[in-house]
Length: 165
Image 1: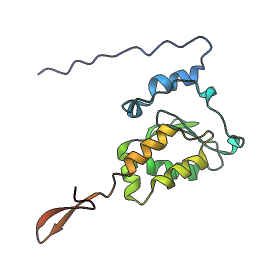
Image 2: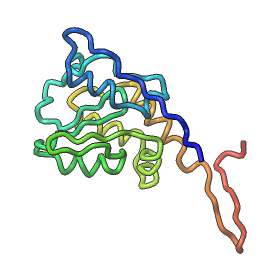
Image 3: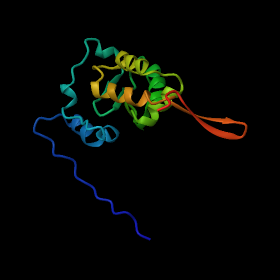
Image 4: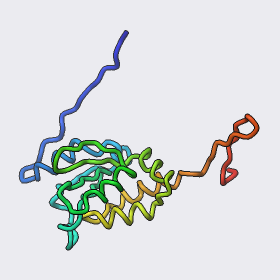
């Protein structure tokens, strides 16, 4: 019995003066969004903070990763939202990491979350603007929900579609 050979690559070297935390984010997160040709190419310090950023609990990164500050007064509200739209990746004491995936967004759409509602809520909670590529990813994933249904009638399965093409 043979196992598939696994090759690993070393993370890219950090540039002089580059934020260590952002470097860690850039090299360890975003595997889902990488397939959509998006990478975190600049340190977190390069992201522009909103004027009232101190009252907001989230950082939404171009990789599709979301960081949640557990010390925020609105942590529990943001947490409830994030577990509905994303998958938890890491939950140490102070900062939790979540990832937007097609499956998590499909599940969110299944419980009546719309693209507009997800983006609006992310904007409300985010310390920075939600990146355009993340908005596009949300739109792409949620727009697929509900186009086809599998229906059981008289003991037979049928596929129903909104569009006949």
